[in-house]
Image (cartoon, rainbow, N blue to C red):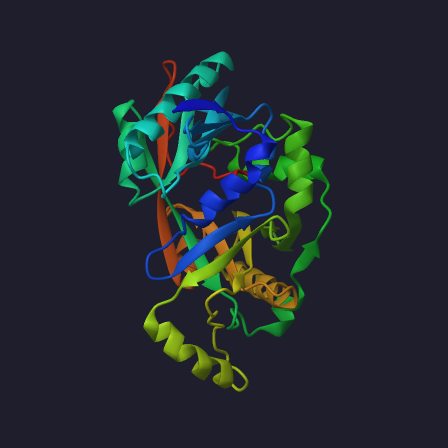
Length: 347
């Protein structure tokens, strides 16, 4: 086995590996990318490594690290975000060794780029990845929840208020950066928004739009053209209920239960600003309407339990996946304190 940089020729193999590693337990979803490298392309000089069996040519595992510039305790620091760290489930023998070799090789690249720390979001029950990170000194510092909200039922009955929600699909980024700085600039891991032309291009490409009501607002990140999820497994109860719900939805507001093989379309909500709690339902209802107009099945938002609006949104969520923020300083640095800023471009 040896470790090397991933190349475009690996694309089909890497997509196949991802399709062998669905997320979830009873409800299993598999991610599908047209280009496996679409996440890596969001970063300047990304590190993307594969462990390869030198005899068979099989890819045993992959690991990515994206260089980012963020603020930590008020200082600007370059760090590395861990992404796409997974193993080929068809090559279980020696699995921990493959993961460790990838980690060790990535450390050399991290040192070459003079990154000061490494961080990543690891599912709470992913004991293997957390174990490796902790072995090298990483700490799990904060819990982030990915809250999944269906769009079948209204969030606000006040049509007059909902109609006052403003929508913009093109933003004045200079003005927007000032708003973000005021709302989130003191949080650890807040990015340097103007750090690269590549990052700004990504924000333009995947921004569906911004919904605002007074001083409250939320944005929508739409990657469905490049990245989707397909249903691999559903609990028996859901399978039985699906035809009943399909008929009943003609007369009542009932959620759409997908069948096996269906593609799930998701919008990611981000940069939530809540001025008045009563604003939030109006904004969410306008977002829901737009989601239905664009054949979106679910809304997802990543929040810390201390974030403004968390309690209101959590009550609407049907699925709440918990991820841990793992942080490993390469040099002597203070640890970030939550709630930290979650950058939607990392998805």
